[in-house]
Length: 59
Length: 452
Image 1 (cartoon, each protein chain N blue to C red):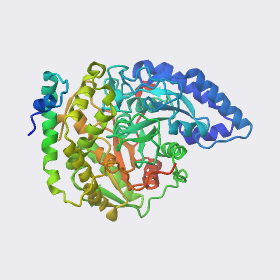
Image 2: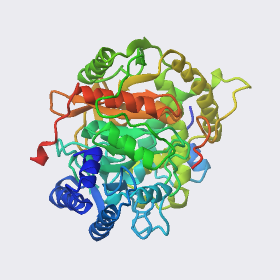
Image 3: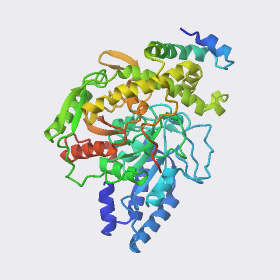
């Protein structure tokens, strides 16, 4: 589990401690929901960094 | 009055665009102090444009279904020479030097612009409780939220302040206000409508689309700003015979207010009665899809606001907290989320081998109270934003066209909404189903009491 305060500090983010305390539970919940998913990826799973369902509308 | 009705009356010379425009302006003057749907009203410009559209019709110049129809834009859509605030402090004095592509398209189609509607700050939230431009109120109950982020657009449409208002949808921001306010919202396929000249919230998740009082009104609006054509069924002639409708057997209908779930099922029964085949269908885990979507949105939204991140006091507390969370997501997690997106898209696409569309709740509940942060559904208490966006984000992650359609009133006399989720680029099918259900008048939505 990331230590959000240390992470913010290491990146030099000016997020006050009280506000870090307030967002930490939500970040932890999301992290927990997400953390198991990348294990299902294979080397063939490329990212979709700029997504398009098919082709961009030509207009 | 609907857009098609107004268009017919305009051409029959029974009403003028100027009269329609002044009627909308009168509604704004009367109700905006209570509802706060508009940030900017362009009275003089609208009256001038309406008179020009009337003059064109006299000369035989007819620009099509939107000719002379009064509309509004969510205040994150660039309008040349008109302040575009994005509902924020950081853009409060921003005046674009050009129009958004969709604004140019509506101008070419002859629409009359009444003004700019309010929104959740930076479109980053679902309450439209805006710390800089004031709280927007749900016209059905002024103590409740209209939904967001396109809350002003939803509130304006159901109070007859305009015939259609454009919204944007990154995690449900067209469909949520449509559901809470009792109007129709159409989030098109990703890329169907140009995002050029629209503030980004999530570069790969943003969709621009209309909110209006009927499916056909949404379709007419969408046709004016995209390559979609011939999607509007004739009144009473929207056949859905033979279409395959999926009712998700997992995910979407779970953790939903019982009345909303029952209303969605009632609409499915009605579709079956109208000749469609309705069948249960299993879908990929939407809670996992939501985790992937939120990971991507956190990073995209924080990236979009990078120039302002050192102005912490310029943001409301909820938006500031979301932007901070975006800073703390790792690059590895973001890229893995983008890899998972493609993997889950392949999985989700298998649904389209079985059905032509999915029915789902628009929102799991009816509109919460202003200031309410927690809500209990099915005995589980959770954050209002997470509960409300739960059935919405799938269509953003995969860019799927989705119609939000009213499906009745709950025991508290609040509108309930459903989603019809379609295949990529198949807006025509979901429009056909929405129009057929409206024609059958299965679940009428009452007009807000505030209209008198």
